[in-house]
Image 1 (tube, rainbow, N blue to C red):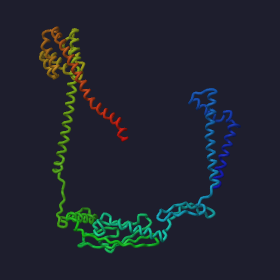
Image 2: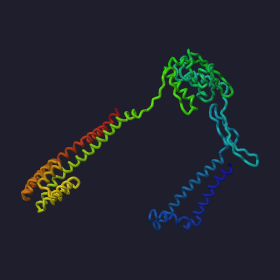
Image 3: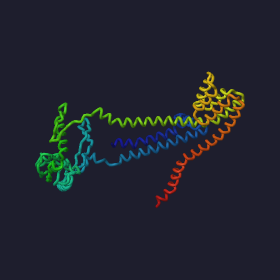
Image 4: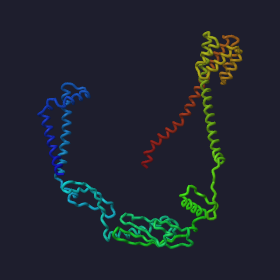
Length: 449
């Protein structure tokens, strides 16, 4: 240890001298040591050249040297402290023994016979109790046991449950062994057997406390109540069945008796029919949920279709009127105008045009087309077309221009209703936000009251 301390003192001093020597009297000074590497790294990091690079490099090296010298100084102080501090107690052979009741302490001992050295682990046990300490510990343990051993029983004069027999006292310094004068009623582990008792039986309990050297005995009295006073017939039957099952664990099959203590015993067998009856309401419930979810999804799709068709109606009629006014045919105008809604409107009109091309009467096809779409505005529009189309495009164009005006007014009304609905949906979040703001404002005042 002394050699290590001397090295801890000398090595930092040598390192400081070497660093200072190389800093002022070696290649380090003219930049042929690690300076180019440091300068190259600083040039990449800070984009420096010329004199600025040299100054930055020198400053970087000076900072690192200061840190290194401080560290070496701390090592020198540490080594000097190790060299000057007195030897510890272990080298004098004095090992502090743990106090009575504490765990044993482990130490490393070095054994040398002159030629070879060996390290072994030695366990130092706790100190023995003095006579006064043992007496005090035993008195405290007996007083504690008088309250502890009866556990959840009503009292020592009415014992119906197992007792608690600890192996040590609460401090762990004393070991405890137990005995009774009626082991068939109260065992050495505190187990109470009262099934065969006809009358209450008084049992003397003996606790022997020892610290390994001295011994103290303490006596307790317990009155065990017969089992039939508190145990019902069914509880007795259950206990006897458990005992039979425990005794027959070596057998591969447990034979259930037909009768135990006058109580009939039968095993219930699970029935497939009964299981189906239990599962039936659950199956019906989940089936109903699936049905309503599917219905709800279909209604949502229909609602989306109705809203979409109503939304594009004005654009459809206006485009149709413009195309007819430009000289486009009615069927071509319908197909082109239907592109405003390719998912719901285009397939319906395409089907109607195909029917007309295959020879179906044009007025009937248009009237049926309005009914197929289903909305009142489309029914009115295609009813007008079916009536006016045979009379010529000029009369149809006049009617469609009026339809455009009506559709425009209806679109404005629809937009107004949607705005009102959006405002109603925003009302609840606004109320919640207002409540939160009021709570934030009032919180400091409430807390300060």
